[in-house]
Amino acid sequence: MYSDKVMEHFNSPRNMGEIENPDGVGTVGNAKCGDIMRIYLEVEDDIIVDVKFKTFGCGAAVATSSMATELIKGKTIDEALELTNKAVVEALDGLPPAKIHCSVLAEEAIKAAIEDYKNKRKDAE
Ligand code: FES
Image 1 (cartoon, rainbow, N blue to C red):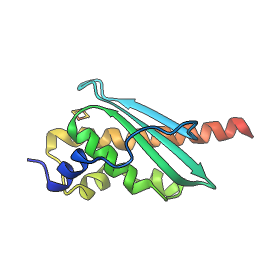
Image 2: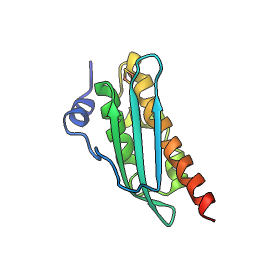
Image 3: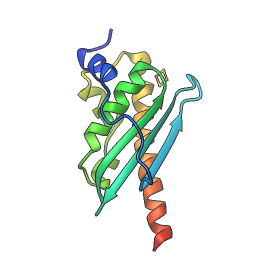
């Protein structure tokens, strides 16, 4: 029921871990399944130079975190904000309908991390 890409990202997730002193962190959870996803960002001149994730959740949540981090690495903050869960699902060659919410978590975690980055920057001004 899972695509080869989902299985591949689940078996060898990219960008798993954390960043010390990140420029932005976003943590989101899904109340229904109880899964939690955290995204760490390192940003230089508005470009995401590094991104890591920690996911306490299902296999699809791990695979979508992995793919989502790959998709925003090297992108500008504005480009990363445009990433939708749909794009993540497409990049993974699809997800079963019951697992779409896992990809929503990835989109939300990235948006939360970017918001944190923007707030931190505002405080520093
Ligand atoms: Fe909830 Fe996958 S089952 S994130």
